[in-house]
Length: 467
Image 1 (cartoon, one colour):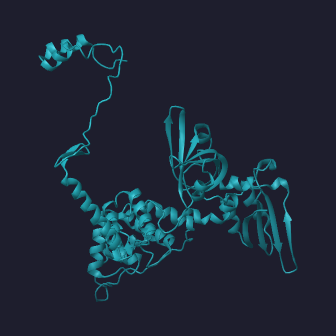
Image 2 (image 1 turned 180 degrees about the horizontal axis):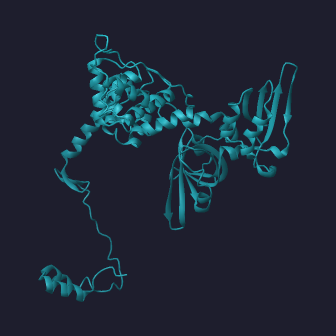
Image 3 (image 1 turned 30 degrees about the vertical axis):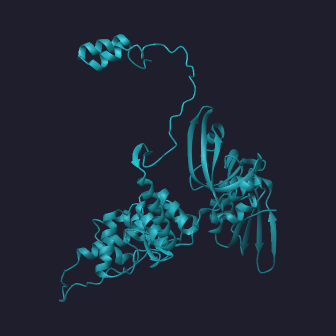
């Protein structure tokens, strides 16, 4: 529990070390007296604001001459001039200066778009290490800002391209680059970031074939220079591009992988894939909260993607903080400990959530606060809105397969509004009919169930219906 040394201890230390400074400290009449009272002796000016002639002034703790302010003014003028007349070059230079700091890159990309600039995505055949202006209003994304690439890998890629021309495809890329420098991790990061989109926009296929392309390149290198048994040199042709087929990424999968490579959603927003349905359940946009809630403290429901989640300790206990983004604005929200712990599985980054809470805008502080009362994921929000799952079949129905798909998502005993009713729309050459399954077959309206049903033969559509 000690927080310092007693006076006697300091005196003994001074004697032991022969330290005059410690001896003076131990003998002082100031440091060891107990404070009895603090009384004001009046007000006294501590700054002379009347400056006549040439004087020095203090800036950031440094005493500098008045000419210092003139230099700052000149730099401010020059910076504003470049931004106004050479916006692409100016913003490209700023982006290149902070390319290792994702948050700053994201902020500058948004600022660039806000002033009307176009940011072209990463391109393996057009991009260089740094961000570069293409014309007065266009910037090319710097390959060096892709996470997992590394400066040496990008420099080697650019040099290889300059020497042998543009890359034809993923297999050509893997055959030509130095695999000791440009490894699998770097190649996958480039694919996720969209650097191969100009060659092939199917990122899922490219990501699934990176290993195959690298193996083909290694086999070709091992056989390079070998002579044929029947005479003639070895075939110097690059390995043929033989891709294995795979399912294309959904938009949210593409954006999630893009965020892994770039640190943020560049080509779109994860909320866009849910916007149509989310706005039915929560019509209020985050950008509209300020005008709606000025001076008020009323409940409101909003929806968005969680882009950050953390906890902090306060004098009143632990507090959860989440940052919600719906493509129109971002807002930090406060979630108190009990609710945060209960909803922790839902409060994950890149998750769509529906938040019920109280928003209030304070005009004097120009601050919008939001206290969360409840949080729901899409499945729970659908169930609470009394949604129905409608499955449309075209032709003979495989009842066993359909039943097996529903069982894992079935709500036990059909309790309450936890699940939603199922409507089966069946049609054949004779006619069609819609059948509402019993309450016992309520199911959780989960995205995984929709995906499972849509993959079944004869299922034309599987969708959530409201009203």
